[in-house]
Structures are given as C-alpha cells and as structure tokens.
Amino acid sequence: MDILIPGFDIQGEIGEGAMATVYLATQRSLERKVALKVMAAALAADPSFCERFLREGKTLARLSHPHTVTIHDIGNVGELYYMAMEYLPNGTLKERIAAGLTPEQGLAYIRQIASALGYAHAQGLVHRDVKPANILFRADGTAVLSDFGIAKSLDDRTQFTQAGFAVGTPSYMSPEQARGQDIDGRADLYALGVVLYEILVGELPYNGTDALSTALAHLTEPLPELPLHHGRYQHILRKLLAKDPAERYPDAAALLTALDNLPPEATEVEATLIQPLPLPPQAAPQPVPQGNDLAGLTPVSIEIPRQAPAPQPAPRREPPEEPAPPPRTSNLPPAGSGASEQHRGPVLALAGVAVAVALAVAGAGYWWLSGDSPAPAPKTASTVSTPPAVVAPPVEQPLAADVDGGQ
Image (tube, rainbow, N blue to C red; front, side):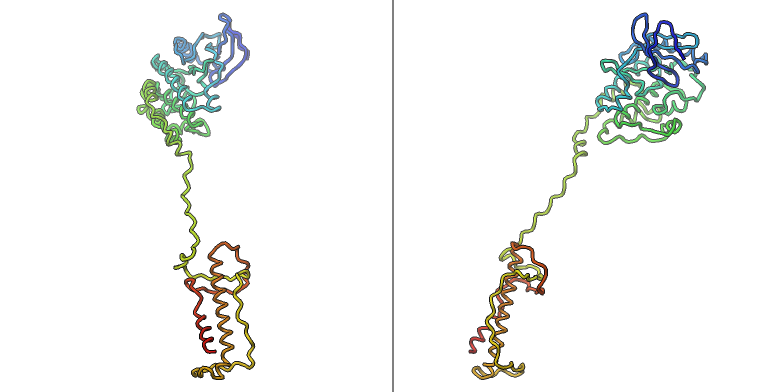
C-alpha cells in the first residue's frame, strides 16, 4: 500500500519484519535522512498494543547513549503508527559475521552493545530482540543497538500479547522468554551470549528445523564446547547462556568486568595444535661387515653367479690307461708298489677338484659380502651352503702334499 506520513518523503523500503516495515525517508523539517518504521496493520488493529507502542516510543526517545539508535519522532496517522529513527547505512553485524570477523573485532562490538544494554536496563527497558540483524553501524564504525520496537518496560506488568506467548527471535531467545514467562535484563544478556558464540564459531549454538524445535533446543540442550583456540571465552559463554537466569551475570556491568578479566590468549597452545607431530627418528643403516667383522655371522646360503671370479684352473687330468680298481677294504700296499702307481691319478684329480671348489666358495663369499658388485644374475647354479665363518682354504692341500710325498 502507499504510505503517506506528513512531514516525511518516503524513498523506498529498506527492510521488513513480522511487526513492521522500515523505509528510507527524508524528514522535511530538518532535511535529514531517517529510517521510518511503520507498524504492521494487523497489530494496529489492537488498540491496547497501539497505546503501548506510543508509550514505549516516548521512553525510547529519551535514550541518549553512544551505542543506542536515536529516535527522532513517533506518532500515528489514522491506523499508521510510525517511528522515525537515526539512519545507519553501514550495514549490520549479521553481514559482518558472514564476511568474517576476528575475535578481537567481535569482542569490541560485544562490549559496545553490552554497554548499551546496561544503559537501557537502567532506564527500565528490556530490548527482547538482541540479534546481529539489529546491530547496525555508523560511518565511523561504531556499533549501535537498534529496533527497540518490541522492548518491554520493566515496570509495566501488562502483557504485550496473551500470557504464554513468546515474543522475539527463536534463535536468540532465552529459555524463560521462549516459555512466555516474565523477563528482565538477563534475557538480553542471554541473547548477547548467542551473538558472541556466533561471532566466534560462525554458526548458532542451537539450530532447529523450525521455531518450535529451535526454542526447545534452548530449553534442553547443553551448550556446545568452543574450539580449543577459543577456550578463553568458554567460561563467559557458560554464564551468559545458563538455562537458569539466576546463574547468569546479574547485569551488563558484571559481564563487562568479566570481559576485562579474560585470560590471555594461549598462543603456545594454538601453535601446538596446528603444528604436526614430529616423526620418530629413523634408525641409522647398519654398516656392512668387513674383514675381521665376519666372525659371528649367521650361516647363510650363497648363490654363486655366473659372473663370479673365475677359479684357478684345476690340474690337467690325464686319462687313466686302465680302469680304476674297485674300492679296497684292506690297508693300502706299501709305497712304491704297482697299486700305488695306479691309484695316483684319481687321487690327484680329486685333490684338484677340491681345491677349485674351495677357491670358488671363498671368492663368491668375498664378492657377496663386499657389496660393490652389481646384483646377481638370475639363478643358474646350484646353491652351496657355506660354513659358519669364512676361513682359510680347507685342509685338502695336505692331501695333495701326501700325494706328492708318495711319488
């Protein structure tokens, strides 16, 4: 509908709520911009509410505080009830929370609004709708508490609406306010605690799918714990958001004192939380045994590669002129006998083979333990088990000496 209020030129709508619509207007007499709040027509149909609206408007007009909105005019034209207020074009706290605030910035705003609430409570008023959307900013960055449209006079025991009807915004409503009970300034401090939680965490402490479930959460659910890096604020939030008003701060002055006595930020704890835990030290690689360190090694199997060092050539084996005699069970004949001459050839051959095998085993062991040679080629030779320790060439050499002595 068209809004015509004498003395004001309305430029356009800048906000709308359940109880009123706010317009940007110019006050002709002083040529200044104002925020003109016009009460909803459905509420204007209740004469008792209209009377209360005008009475409380006059009370708000007497408020003079750096962090409360200034009221310029209040009145009615027929069924149009209006309130002309200070125009604050620099946005709301709701917008700043969405953009991101540091705890220090948010805490400065909480102090300013707590100061405004303390002043309003001293004047006998309870705001009843403290929330980020109702905290505006002047051009100099000062936070201002606005929208006292549903404020309640502490000395007025008449009911704004029917008994048991909750007035306010469910997400910021104290338990007693959600029950529709009589309230005092501690209900505003509860709502301010919800605002502080939202500044720190970026979300509300209690969320429901509708107004009823949200109000029920305020009544029954415990306060969520803050992240560890905001732990210094946990005690203050427990006091502000206590279910029982008697357990909260008694007034805004007590809250401001608690804010002044906040413990310092635990910067060392924060650093510990964001730094990864150090990795355990890695064991140094074990050195490869060399030389005399070979003693005590566990016996292993060695694969003799095809590229192993070539063994010394075995003594040339002359083919016997006649087949070797079958094994004897009796003692050998005396040296120089014909049987000794026949036995010499096979013995020499066996001795040569034994020496060659011993040299091959020793060379392969040295090659395996030195670690300098490339990885062994695919397995092509049989596996030979070595003795527990690498020792000097085996005792087959005396065997060869015996053979020489017998010549």
